[in-house]
Image (cartoon, rainbow, N blue to C red; front, side):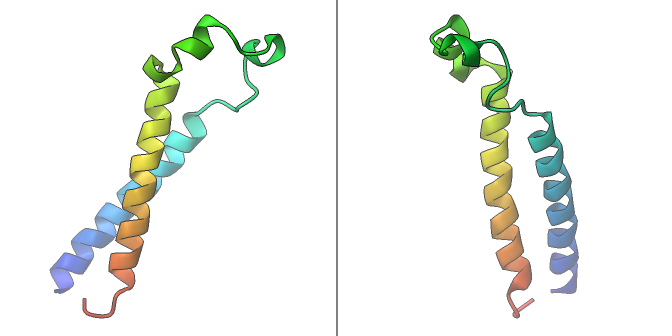
Length: 78
């Protein structure tokens, strides 16, 4: 069980670093001129295809992985 805990800890550290990097790469909610004009622009209509949408999806996936790994590592049967 010690090997499994070590592997999960390494994965946990990598997920933590990845989550930090992805969050820092995202733009703020008020970034861009679309916020000034009201937001009904080409950018707003095609938001799901942008790299920003991919960052948001990656953030959600890494956040879930972070929580699951944190709970697994906290259990006492390892």
